[in-house]
Length: 199
Image (cartoon, rainbow, N blue to C red; front, side):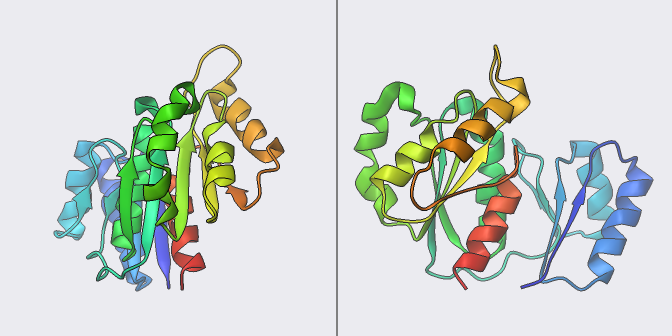
């Protein structure tokens, strides 16, 4: 599986067009442009007319999504503020041919909500769990569900959240079995990892 990725941040429309041409010239199976504004998306579509964009995350899928395979992936978000990262993972997983489902707002502040979807989450082959603040949700999921968990710390929070560093540190220190941690806000990286784990 070949994947090409570019970051749209701070690119002018002409730079977006050049970057997209460069990405597609590599001949990847799947290509993404991350965190694109509507203006940048319009520029990308000049080069890749079939491109699509997730509005909340800004992730642009430049190539046609691959045919879906029966490889269920659960994408879980702790709170609504984590949804941009969770939707980036969801959109990428769909484009990579997985069969993802989103479960939102099941953070540990309302543990009953997580327990209420435990059976549903157990049906997934891999779980991608996005959480900011104290970053506790992925380790709770890893202890409840006997599947690999890809934890994605998000940059949301207040106090000493430090742009996601507090969540990252909590996830790395949890010691939960079957838990792996991506970079801060890296829903795309988690989806690519899930795809590689399942093939």
